[in-house]
Image (cartoon, rainbow, N blue to C red):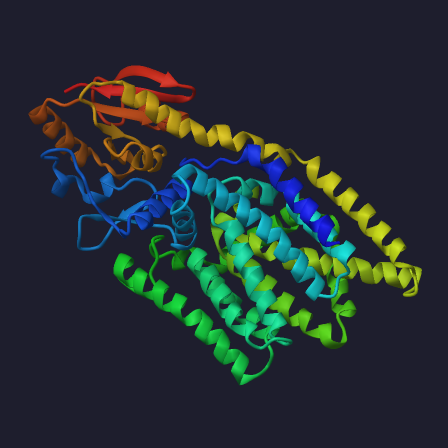
Length: 489
């Protein structure tokens, strides 16, 4: 069966590779890649670089902070807004590979190792090799997994390290020293996504109930907890603060109903309809495996429960990437429940060939239904969609005019990564008063101000008749759907 697993992982990665999009695009990917570059150069921040004599005190430093960055309190330094885990992985790969190849290698390795760990997890939870392989196939072809696997996002990496923590904790029952690996894995998962800390109950449930195991768990995870607390205190002003700002107010019971409906609609489409068999695992896990009831319950409820209170989770189908680390236990429980039902129907003495054939049939149906959804093909469009940012900036830089101050929001993160000679000005941070200060600076410096806008941004700035920011704006061309503008002095 290991040969089948190797063939599955290798074939999957070969199939997935052409869709990889290791480019800085929107806020998430650009923020992660820029942060990785900082770590590669042994730096945690960079000084803000405003245009010459720019009225920074009047306009505010935040107007010059591209997406994926923020101004460190009390300074004029830019720091990343996103957690350090994924950037550190990319920076480590970048020690051996060029930047783009480093990103690509991390994406490929993450997808492959996540599948291997899911197989191991399923086997530890009592599934036979065929059923465990079936779970890997279902997970691999989830539209949500495909969506995040081809982009430099943290979701799949958080899933990898979460699985590693549970596997190590469970296997510490046979080899106590592995409990240290559970602590390390949970620590790295927390670097990747700080909310992974909520999985401590699941990891404790999987661990041997001994003080030595708990001690190893703490020793393994403590250095990462210290690093996270120290970094957040330095960058954001408090050990418990983050680059997202204070989002506690966004978590509310008022979001619960909408999120639960969203889960009910999308989890069967993203984790497959097999999850309806998940409750059957409660009867299937008996004896030594009975602890898996508590492990899976603590794992799934921590993730789905927390993000059910967050409004972003229910915005669209790909917002479900926030709960991606809950998919492995859901799929494993589903297959355990299905196997229990099959066993009761066919008799527990049924030959392995019959149950294996049933596993293959079930997976074939589930994967076919996953592949028939429109979201399944989204991954093919991502590489081109992300590449647009870089290519549009190349076109913008071909204009050798003195326009180096450029109004942009959606493009600002990519500009920070690919075109540091530009000075992005976040128009969403401007007011009529600060725009007048910028126009006065422009007049003194005899400088033009550009704009690089997505279609919705163009509508925001120019769709209401008079321009939102008064100037004799001139169109300067476009690249695909991104338009360029000039505001002369």
